[in-house]
Amino acid sequence: MLVTGASGYVGGRLVPALLAEGLEVRCLARTPAKLGAAPWSDRVEVVEGTVGGDLAGAMAGVDVAVYLVHSIGQGPGWIARELEDASNFARAASDAGVRRIVYLGGLGRDGDVLSDHLRSRHDVGRLLAGSGIEVVELRAGVIIGSGSTSFEMLRYLTEVLPVMVTPKWVETRCQPIAIADIVALLVKAVTAPGPVGGVYEAGGPDVVTYAGMMAVYADVAGLSRRRLLRVPFLTPRLSSHWVGLVTPVPVPLARELVESLVNEVVVEGRSATGAFSVEPMRLREAFARALAATQEGNVPTSFVDADLVVFRPTPTDPDWSGGTVLSDVRHARTPLAPSAVFGSIAQIGGERGWYSGGWLWRIRGVLDQLVGGPGLRRGRRQALTVGDALDFWRVEDLVVDRRLRLHAEMRLPGEAWLTWDLVPDGSGTRLTQTATFRPRGLLGRLYWLGVAPFHRFVFPGMLSGILADATGRQQAADPRG
Figure (cartoon, rainbow, N blue to C red):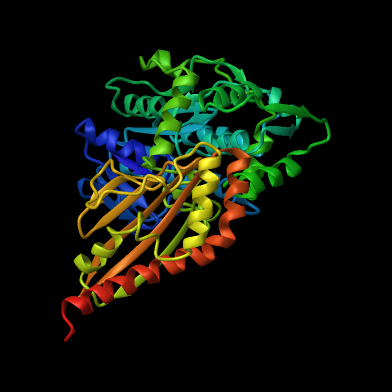
C-alpha cells in the first residue's frame, strides 16, 4: 500500500491502522525525517518525493494507493496545483498498474455553488476517477478528533469566548464524524476484496448546526452556556481574521475553511458507513474522546504536522498540536552529574522554599488559601514519592536523577505543571525546566498574561538557584572539587 500524506493528520493515524491489518506500507514523504519520530517508522518503507514529482519508484509494485494530500490555502494558484498534482498521481498510478486509489475528499452537493475548497476536493476526485483505475472517494465534512483543524477551531472558539459575535453560517447544517471512524472507513476501502469503486459520503449519526456543535462541546467540556450574537455583516474574510486571532489555525487556512461553512455538508448520497459496515460514534462521544486525548497530551497527529507552510507551527505552539498549552521553558548546562542536580531539585518546596522569589510564592500561597486552595501550608515529606503533596503541588512523576513533574492543586482557571528533565551530557548534565499551563476559557488566558511578568523573575532564579545549591552541595561534599 502506498500512503501519501503520511506525515499529516489523517495519514499519520491511517498508517498504524494499516500495519495492524498486516499490510505492507510504503510512505511518500516530502521530508522523510518528519516520519522518523513516528513509533511505526521502522515498519514502513519511506520514499522521498512529492505527488507532483517523479512517482515511478514510489508506485512500483503498489496494489492500492491512498491519496491524502491537498494544497488548501497555499497562496494564489493553489487550486490549479491541486489538479496538476492529482493528474500526475493518477497518470503514475495507471502506468504502474495500481489496482485501486482511495481518496479522502469533502462533502457538499455537486449542484450547489461550492466554496473553492469543496469544489477543488470534488474536482480532484473526478480527475482521479478519470484515470481508468478503480477509485474509492470518501467524502467527509467536519472531522472530530484531537488535533484536527475542525476540532481545534471549534474548541478554541468555544473555550475562549463565552460570548461570540457570529455570522449567519453558524446555522449551517453539518454531519461531523470522528477521526477513528474515518480511519476505519479508509482501512475498509483499502482492504475490500471486491470492486467497490465510487463516491461514498461519510458522516456520523448527528446532523447539527455549527452553533449546535459548539453547544454540545461546551456541555461535554463542562463550560458554561455559550451565547452567540448573530450579525449579518460578518464576512468570511473578517471571520477568518477573527478565527486566526483566537485559534491556532493560520488566517490563510482559516479563510478557505470559513468560506466552506456556508455550504451544508451532510450525507445525502451513498453512505460510506453503511457500505463498509462501520458503526460511527455519536458526536458527544467523539468530543469526549478528543477532549480526553487533548487534556492528556496524547495527540498522535495534528493538523500542524502536514508538510505545508500554513500548517507549520509557530514557536509558541505546543509540540503535539494546536492545543491550548502555554509554557515557560528554560535550559541550562552544568558540569555536575545528574544525581547532584536532582538532589537539589528533590529538595524544593517546604521549609527550603523555591530557590527564588520567596515573597512571591508566599503571596501566591496566601491568595490560594483565601479562595479555598491548600496554599503553602501542606509543606512536604522529606523524601518525595509519586502522589505526595508538596505545598500546593502534587508529585505526578518522579524518576530519580532524570525527572520530577509536579501538578498544581492551587485554585486556577486551568491546569498547571512544573517539570524538570535531566539528560546526561558528556561529563555533565543538561537541565530543562518547564512550566506548563492549560487555560480554561478566556479567564485562563488572562490569568497567564497577568502572571507572566512575575515568571520573568521567578523561573530564571529558580533554575539558577537549583544549580547554585547543587554546586554548593558538591563543594561541601568534596572541598577539593
